[in-house]
Length: 342
Length: 264
Ligand SMILES: Nc1ncnc2c1ncn2[C@@H]1O[C@H](COP(=O)(O)OP(=O)(O)OP(=O)(O)O)[C@@H](O)[C@H]1O
Ligand SMILES: [Mg+2]
Image 1: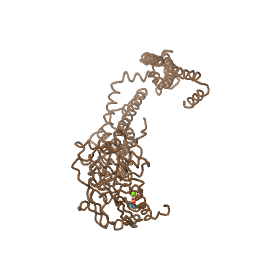
Image 2: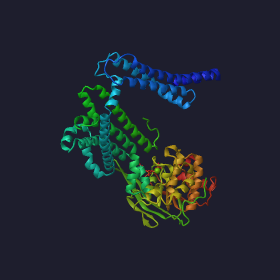
Image 3: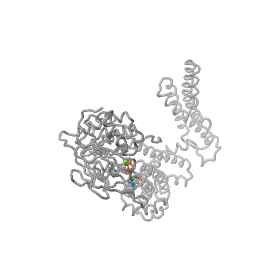
Image 4: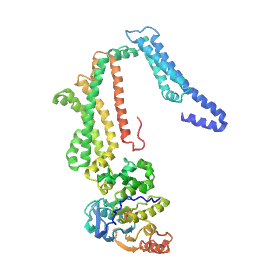
């Protein structure tokens, strides 16, 4: 893309405005064209559903085809709107290449699974088989999502809060550091899942045991990074605040914590990743609910379509959680330059 | 650039007297003692403007830290208006060598820091606005420090000190990072601030001309450990003129004290 624009700038310098207008027109046309191609690729997906009879027994083939046609039509409308509206053109330019690819992949997938059966069947379900899971097994899936979200949110919130408070305390107070630091070094690096057998035995319910494990997985990185953040705050900041009349509480809440916040967020991100892993394992091993349990249940019945459907939901949830955390960080750390975009 | 805005209210009394009596100080580095101040004695009348000159690393900043109350001296006494300085007090405010603005606070909130720390920001917000106006940064109130130039940051840190209405203003090379033009106008501004507010001022600088242009007395320190080498009265009314031959003579004298008069 960049070499293209450089060469077009050179052309512009060499041959004057007339040819540059042609080049620009060409680029504009190309953008719209990709939109039309995206529409065609989804049309192809829809037609692949009607191409010939399914080799298996799936009830949602027609609905999938209809949805594909509707999407194809919508893309076409936006692609045509791009001839008049700059906003539509921007949307097309950003999304269309991915939509082309998706349409093609779906069409091929449909062909080699439902129509030709080239891929071994229970392991490679067709698109309509996965859609069928969402339409027909919706209540159970929703229950699982809700159970997972509840467990994850509770454990993560507890772990993050305890980790943050512990981190600030050991960063601030030598006495707390003396007692907590060895514990942290000894227990922290242990994977939280190693506690699983003990936790399920020691806690009154598998739900509280899992909450504890998730909190543990979250708490360790949050503690360590908060602590190192507080410890690395430059003394110059404290000197400034103290000469201006700051009390110790001001130094903690208005100097140490804001200065350590970038580190704290690194810890929160690491904790989030670690806690996802623990969540799934805990649900598989003990809690008889949630997406992890759904996955295992689906595997037990060789219901691979259900597994893929659950995996897709899970990845959306995890990605959503990370996005949300990035939003919060960008809001709170607006004063930093060059924050990473997710 | 100077605006007729008073940060201080009308009841402003003159600054405090400062007495440094036989103060010595040393640091421990790698188990060795590093003497930094050697029996420094220095008195400033209320409202006096005193400049401290000396070679780099001789202990000027250390002396200022002791005056501020950030550290106790190893021996000797420091007195503000006859009362021993035992700790920090917002009546003595430091403008540090580095601006050290808090990057997570806007310019306005940086300047508000002292009032916030003392819990009086709610009723005294106008003082923040006035201080920002004073240093000519009112339009940058909502900027973050990384959006400022070095000179602007230095001016914010000056405003952050002034907003506290100090009795003793301690300036550690506050203009060191400024370009020479901003520097000249800031010097004029500091003089008029000082005349208007009447605080006692202790200014460390490397710039002999700056010391002579601003201060009523210039104290010259030796190499580390800092000893008083000379205490020179600059007997000229304000506003002063940079080309004044009297100041040029003093400059020559001070260069001689610092062992640099061959370049004259
Ligand atoms: N916290 C500290 N611990 C150990 N040594 C220190 C400390 N602060 C300063 N020193 C030493 O004390 C000496 C004097 O330092 P100081 O900062 O007072 O110098 P200065 O006169 O302000 O120099 P400059 O003009 O370059 O700012 C230096 O040699 C420095 O190494
Ligand atoms: Mg210094």
